[in-house]
Image (cartoon, rainbow, N blue to C red):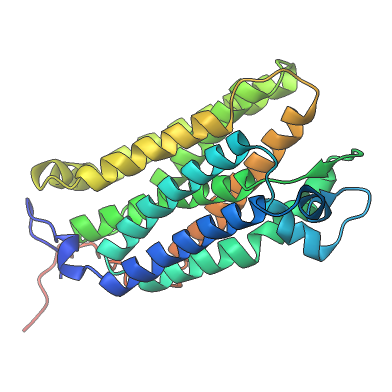
Length: 292
């Protein structure tokens, strides 16, 4: 049953402490693994990097856990822990255990290998390593976690155009700050902005009632504010303004592939209702009273 106007369901009532503990443990174990690999001898860490000229499935996975400087490790560690904690808190508060488990499992089993081999699309004689691609995949998952939390808070489905709008707007931002100015890059940025704006307008028209209810019942609570700020912050840090050429371009490519993979994976799970107990879509009310 849908909440009445001006009311909303409190996610804390569906709080799942087991999910929160398992999610927190997973984040902690990954953080320990990152530090543990960093403490290995340099020669061992070099053997774990992904070499484009000699790619293997093993190094395609292990390379993401390798760092050679404290700054590189520290920045990736802080970003990952922040994102991991935010997503665990959002999904555990609404009892979305299986989405949380599925997300973390896919993120740490499938995404690393997929990212490494997709990175071969940019030919170069180099190596790749570092956890930033996985962190950006987690950044892509965050908008879906935010919408799931908001749906539970309002006890009604949120129009999926909000997610599409956020993705296209973020793609436009990435293109604007990371790609050298050219007719092609300008066209991509403009197209992303147009699509994002169109989806945003459609969402606002279709969800006026939801937004009023959100304002009435304070659906935009502290958890949501922190999540949105974290998403914007990670997009800003993950896609800085750069000059063409050098390793930074390939890093941005991996960041974007990770972000797109994370978003697409979570969006499909959300849209196809594969995990979790989302609110059912409201049916249009008939204008004719049914016969007794």
